[in-house]
Amino acid sequence: MITLKERIVNSETRIFKAVFPNTTNHYDTLFGGTAMHMMDEAAFICATRFSRKKVVTISTSQIDFTKAIPQGTIVELIARIEKVGNTSCVVRVEIYKEDMYNYDRELAVAGTFTFVAINDEKKPIKIIDNA
Image 1 (cartoon, rainbow, N blue to C red):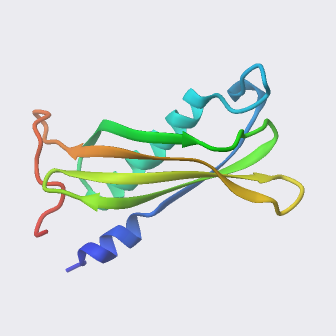
Image 2: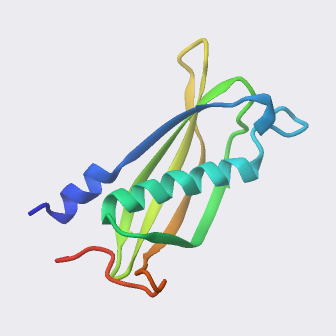
């Protein structure tokens, strides 16, 4: 049987994207709402891989936008399980920005998303069995 620690390690999710003009604001940087959408998607995949159950986002916690993400950069989203409850889990998501044409890379955005596992009637259930 797989341990909780192994589940957490195996569920880490990494997604790479390029920042194109259709995702930027009038300052030619990534829209905050688009960044949050990408983060929620990465967190959802991580929570699903962790639990192998239906999960829904129930909250987000402080999302810090520390660096602007300009058009024409590559972003990497890294989602990791941070905390596990009875029916829920907390996923931390970080967005790193990197220049396409050199090795500059830095943390730009970070936040947490809480997911709850649900059954077919959309009622909370244990996030993992045998935990």
